[in-house]
Length: 248
Image (tube, rainbow, N blue to C red; front, top):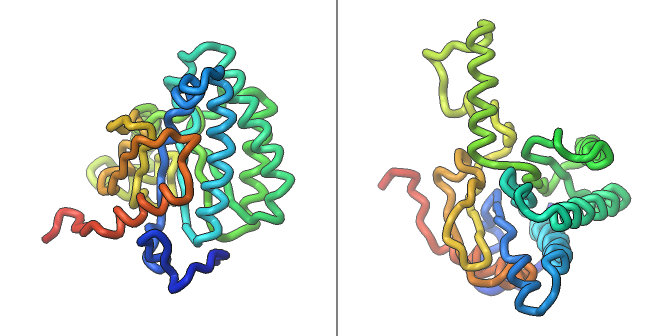
């Protein structure tokens, strides 16, 4: 159910009756945002976390079905230990607040990625939010955490190969939808729109399988400065395009 009411169901050129079902965002530019202000990179991540909170809540309010965000990649472990620790601390803070407010906000949360390298406390928080989310219907926020598209595909291939060896699957009858059932995103429709802030023009190992027919929107705006108006621009651009999925 949408909580958002706009005049004549439009704002900044967006038709809120024709929203994409699933938007995915690569939350990029936190470090550069901080550097431009003479701040430590950790300050950029803190600002980015607040932007995520604002955008996720707004997506719920306008009636979006799914929002997927790239929070921490399999490659991000290469960053300085202090920065990684700060990111994990922000995640813990957000999840603690989310657990306390989920009954009120009714935002479902799921996690894509290998959570095993996380601290026991973080893993337990992720599990708690998953369990609470099962009570609700409405906007689902998927947080990609220790996630990489190639890692996801490799894990899926291994799982499928095991099922073949053990007689639970037949390689002669594999379909796209069947293979999709081995991915972290099992049961979630592919993203219609992928947004990449910060001026970079690449996927960075994000949702490689799921993005096959997604529309892309790139902007120079750094993630901490990403606003509802910038989201409107992305959605309006999406709505102006013709999606033919290989047809005419």
